[in-house]
Image (cartoon, rainbow, N blue to C red; front, side, top):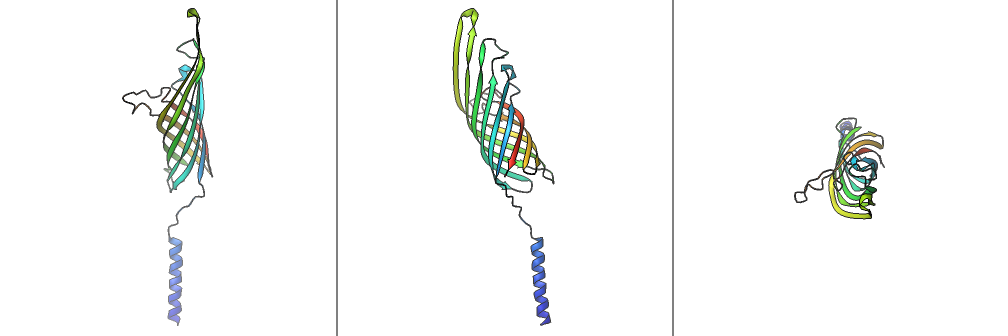
Length: 206
């Protein structure tokens, strides 16, 4: 009888010990991440002042110890005033581009504390470019109002460096359109339809 009780106690003890040492999968209760980014185009400042924003809604696909995968949508809205265009004094107007993109985000936390992260985020979607303004050349008696629209397939990548504070993130980023690299030899990076943005942003996971 004593041997039976001792065997039962040993089995129960081993079972408890195994449960305590069994690897526990980390499960996060965060399903979504929202981000709002301020954008600036450093290469098209000759056309005038510019500013914009990008709003992202992303859903967590995988959450590991150092790697997270997310997917979602991004809405981009940018504005360039051409009133102070350095190339000509005859234009008074602006250019606005609005885009909607599918995004896939790979986030890597290189350190054990998981505060600092690096993000690599390809995107693909549609951009609508619209220019509105007035052309005035007094010496030739030219007064013309113009409206130009151009919609096109756009693709590229966003590279971010950020810092996580609880459920919030703060990041600096570069947003590069790669349109032109696969367009039959046309290669004009950082043009009006292949923009380069830099900026800062905040995010919140819930």
